Length: 291
Image 1 (cartoon, rainbow, N blue to C red):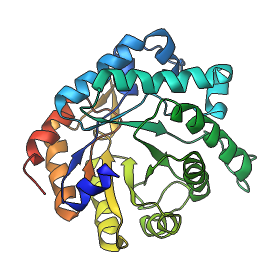
Image 2: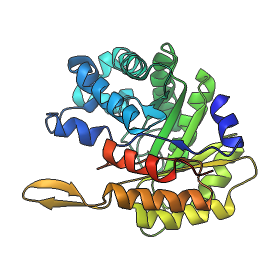
Image 3: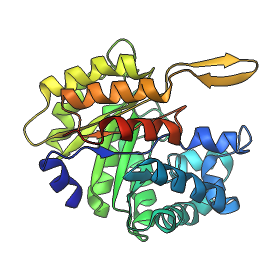
Image 4: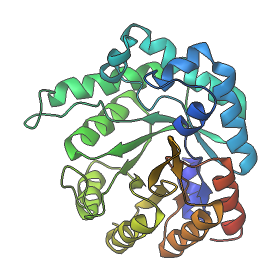
């Protein structure tokens, strides 16, 4: 696979940043599923992809984070799951052409798996296989399975990707405690996902770039042979200022932390909630000559 070949050569690859943050800035109402805008506002989604490309992103993620049947059903959109996912990949591909990789964004179902909740492993596997199967018809380059906290759920997503035939990158979200909200440690992520054959994994979202640095240190120290790392922090902890959510990490701050991640051995860097193309541009310019 070309991406892995680039990482084997020591290249650092830049991923994009937040999608939902920018959609909200451009009019997405509270309570409306971001994925619906693939159908009603495709030009807005496409423009965001283009802005990240221009900022230096080499991977753009589709607007499909909640594109599984279980999550879409909360907005009565489960009947449009194929349309939403296929259109998302088409929008991204048309926006960036062959200038960047198109990654299918796949997030949690929003439900707890047994024994903590009612969702069975088989139901989760089916939901992810359905989403990725539809998206695969439009040939994304790979999938990024992101913001997971439960090992069982991300296992289901990985197995679904393998059954469909999509290469997957995996990221889990860790709290200030150093574990996910379901108690998973970075060491467990590395051990369990590498057993499934995952070659690219790491962390995204969380509380900000500073806390993520501690997680990256653990991942880098314990990474198995042949495994590459990815890190995509939020632009700091969100705060409510004048009734508006504000993320305080500047592009310069995010770029400085990206440099620290790379020095520890991270191969793909990007950003998550609260970030913008300006943050990605800062990261790109800061580490453009780094290997």
